[in-house]
Image 1 (cartoon, rainbow, N blue to C red):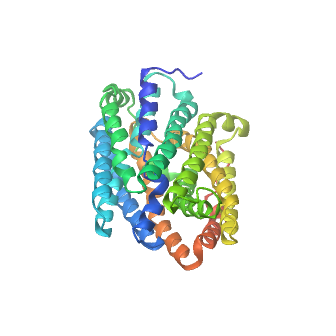
Image 2: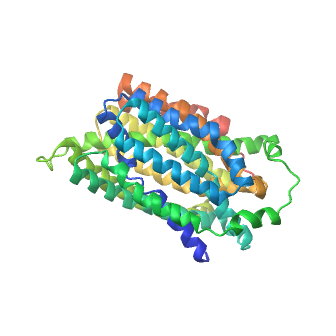
Image 3: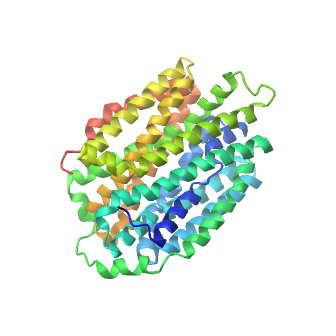
Length: 402
């Protein structure tokens, strides 16, 4: 049974507030309304991921050497400035600048907060609970996303403008900044005093099996984060095809569908993340669990693409729900498995390496999928894109030794 001490609730509050990104359910729709093609949108995502990738390892080293709490505070500040630029400035060039700041926020955050959680478990002697503990804190993040969907939909519906969601996101992010400042200093100090490993991070990659762990995690996460944004145009098409709210404009009709669907998706992902340890116990093998969810996830998006291509918009929505759930079953297992092979005092850096690989792949995948969507439509683009991952799966399949 997880002990919910004061710090647990601070971790949970961080995840909940961090996922109140009111722009997220409407980001592609916002860009499309601004006159951008899918390829231009893909380039923006590439810029974001490129900045994250370039700064990933330096920020991980910064977090391990200077302080993880301090690094998280800078992350929130970068996000806040990004939101301000998106709200006030409208040119493609300024969108690129805002994406750069967002990417910097991602690199400062990714791996760092997970390390704070794992440090807390180490200090309190609860390392054996890491899958369950991380899954439970992550469930609060997903609950934040569920609430986020409803608030974001309400903002767009009442204001009739996608831009409002950026300025609204300042409120939870300022609150999270205050929350992070209250984290105990011991999370920076004690873990370094407790561990004196002689092994370098480089030694982790000497085993082929360890490299596969990183690849399996990063490739699926990059695939998921690239395709998940395309649920938005599918929902928009679904909203406009349904015979209700006909007296409202397209943005308001879309906001209702987007809000309701994303709310239910994130309610389910919150539950799946919270119970990921139960899933792992049933499978009784980390490698098997990750391999199985990889294959199912890619297969459902392939099918979603096919149904979208033949103008059936309702079935792809359900299939996207499946991959959201699978991702939240996978992620706590991924983090636990990676933490098993990385020296504790190198954990922020090690998780940043995994995140860097993921962002590099997203930077490659996003414009490719955007180009395909412009040329052949969203449906066939998703179908073709997913088929590639089924082909490469044998290369990154994990051996059943964990």
